[in-house]
Every structure is written in structure tokens, then in C-alpha cells.
Length: 151
Image 1 (cartoon, helix red, strand yellow):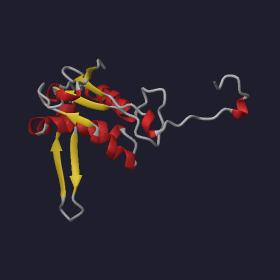
Image 2 (cartoon, one colour):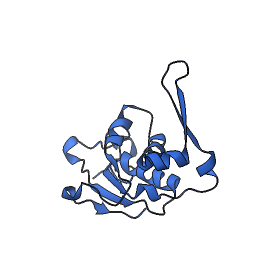
Image 3 (cartoon, one colour):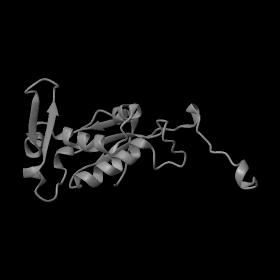
Image 4 (cartoon, rainbow, N blue to C red):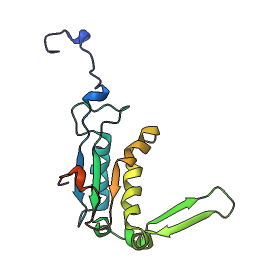
């Protein structure tokens, strides 16, 4: 349709609300490297794998990640990587090492890795709502019949 138009007359097509198809995808994180897995999940949540990707629209798919506690790490990250949060009050800084966080809440490690790879805007919160992470292979989304994706 656009091939016959001169270059100055071509328009960028922005998908309308009814044209955006969001699927449910299932990813098994067992023995996958944390950073490589997180970057692939971030691309899927943003919708960069679709031909009608638009930066200011929510075009990404829903992602269900299972076996998050069996994610693989390289180097000395298990000993040296530290997550910290700050409440805003004096003395309100708390640190937790990666190994402690994996024992306490293994899903949080992958969540924070994906969150850091998404754009820092209002749409990122809505993208993260489409991410479901489970430490084991049991998940409550069988009704959506997610397609298994190899990353």
C-alpha cells in the first residue's frame, strides 16, 4: 500500500487499540543466565518483537516465568552483588546480598533485573504488571494457555 507513494508522503502507522493483540507467553528460567534472560523478557514486555512496536503504547505480551529460583549467575555476583533500598528517613537504608535475596524471595531477583532494563516512565509500571514470576514450576495461569517460548 505504501510502496507506491513517494518518500515524503509515507506515514508512520500507529496501531489502534483493537489492533493490538497481546498474547500470554511462558518462559522456563531453569539454568538460564539472569541478565540475558531479563533482557529478553524486557523486550517482550515492551513489544519490540512485534512489527507494530510503538514506544508510547503498551504493545507487549504477558509473560509468565517459572523456575525463577533456579536462575544461573556468573562470576562472584552471589557474594559481591548487593541490593539496597532507602526509606527517605535518616538511617533508613537497608542492604541485602544477592544470595540472601535468592533464599528469601527468589522471584524478586528476576523482577528487579527486568525492572532495571525497562524505560523509566509511566508505561514501565504497566509493563511490569504484565510480568508474572513464580519460583517453582507451578503457576495459576493455565486458563490463559500460555505458549512456551525458548529464550
